Structure formats: C-alpha cells, structure tokens
Image 1 (cartoon, rainbow, N blue to C red):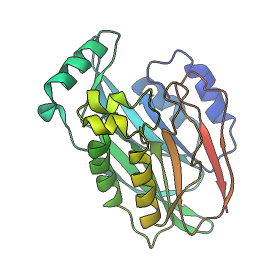
Image 2 (image 1 turned 60 degrees about the vertical axis):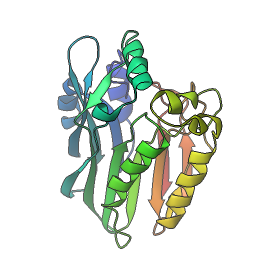
Image 3 (image 1 turned 30 degrees about the horizontal axis):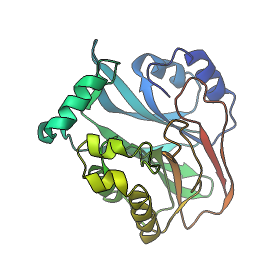
Image 4 (image 1 turned 120 degrees about the horizontal axis):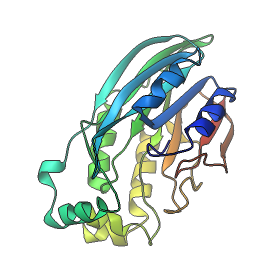
Length: 250
C-alpha cells in the first residue's frame, strides 16, 4: 500500500475478493489494521517504521495474512542510519520532506511460520530502505540471519533496488558512492548472486513493478522446495505507487 492513499476502500475490496493462501502488505496505516482483522483469516503484523513527515508522526505496518494457522512470528530488527548520514544526504532529505517526503525510524521486518496442509513453511515480509546498495546489503544480512535452508521459505517485500540510469542518482544522494549511481546494474547483479547462494528464486526477475523507477522494486522469492506455476505483475495499482505482484507455487 501507499500509506497516504485515499483509495483504502478499493485496496480493501481487492484484498477481500482475492483468492489467496498468503497475502503480504507493507506501508499499512494504523487505521487500516482493524479492517484486515475482520477478514477472518490469520494475521501477523509488525510496525515497519515510524514516519516523520512534515506533519504528525505516523506508524505504518508490515502485515502477513494467511488462510492457514500462524504458529509463531518474530520481528527482524533493521538498523537506523539517521546518526551517520552524510551532509548532502541530510540536505536531500530536508528538501524531500518539503514535498513531502518522510524520514523513517524504528524499522522492523517480520517473519512467520505457517502450518499448511503440506507442512510448515516460513514467510518473510521485509521493506528494505531507500538508501544505497551498502545499506541495503546490511538489511539483507539481517534477513538472512533468520533464513533456514531446511524450512521451505517465501520472502516478500519491497527491496528498493534501483536499476535504471535515470533513477540511480538516488543511490548517491542517499549516501552512497558516485559509482553506485553510475554502475546502475551492479546492485542487481550482486543481489541475484546472493539469491542463488541461498537457493532462492526471484519469481519475477526482470519485471518492472514500479513505474517511476522502471525497476523491479518488489519481489517474491521462493526456496527450491517450491515449483513456480505462475508469476505476474498486476496492472491496477489500486492507490499504490507500486504494482501488486502475485505468484502461484506448488
């Protein structure tokens, strides 16, 4: 979701009318949680961060909905970089907050273990920061610290990997190196290598999920126990700045 969306009713109707086993959401505003709890399925959520826009602070959530029982859930603590930002990054953030853009604190990801008719699986939901490749690599490390190759796993989330020359200047503006802006395919190459290293398949590799960046920001990764039957990017964004994505596995 886009936490400021005015199309919450359309978003809710989409979720309620979708035939899903597992549904992951991010940037869920606090007032939307009670509506999700009314769906009658199992739910787990964590505060993915407190946004500090020019107005009042807003807490947003990462949510996992499941048709099957959730056995347990655990937060994935993500680092706070606000105290080590470079001067030009602080200036950039100040300028962006005027349009408005929000700073995020107290960030967490989420994973749950779910008991399906075919056995236990682990589902992770993670919103990687829009910073630069080195920072995102640290957050992937936090994720993979909870990754057990003995448990069938699905990892969902917005990883904010920028891979087009018109947008990777943000990698430098948000504290990275000049080469992070110029070598615009490097981060994608490195992260795909890490996926392979952990026996994960990027089901939507090469697809554009965010119109402005023309990049695959959003991912569903599946471990080798799953067979991908279908994967698609849905056209109707339903009030979000990202396209919804879905994957069918067996």
